[in-house]
Image 1 (cartoon, each protein chain N blue to C red):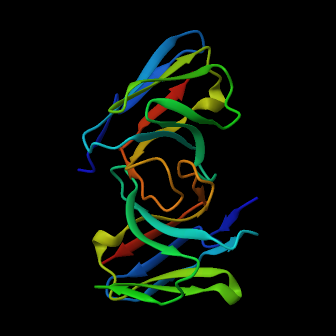
Image 2 (image 1 turned 30 degrees about the vertical axis):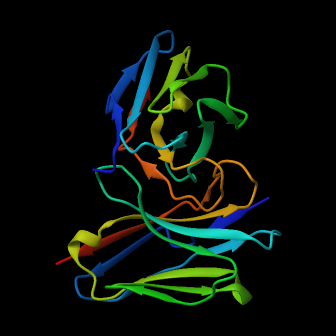
Length: 116
Length: 115
């Protein structure tokens, strides 16, 4: 069985601060995919990034960066110079290869509040 | 705008009512999903349809009945619900429904309250 843990329930930062959202996963599969989704107040989850288990390269996209470490089963997400528009709930998710449709296992989410 | 539209946005129903949630995707995808989002719990996968065929029923009570008449539309029929069924119900779609690497496109959800 798969499990995703996001230990931080809520984080509050002041604009322009850097913030890291933690994600720890559990799976016995050797082939899997990790995702981050953002859920703004409007409700829809928005895809941010996908990473497969064989690619441990860190990735940077603008103010966003992701640190994938198989040794610690972690896939952390950092927002640099946070902005008010970053306020949302962020979900980490895991999917293993089943040969059928995607079945994501989600964490409980981290609510990020960015204030002026 | 993610290309996935859900109606209604809000729904209040009594335990004896029958109602339906609707989802429509304009992305040309072949797979559609229903997820349940309850407070302080992970999103729970309820149903998956791939090419209009149900490929996953995640031990969901029979008071929830999905319907997928074509690859663009997905319904969730509700009857004799319980107060603990109150939650945000999210619809999603993906390109092929054939791989675990697919990214999902979500609608804004229907906030359901069962009285």
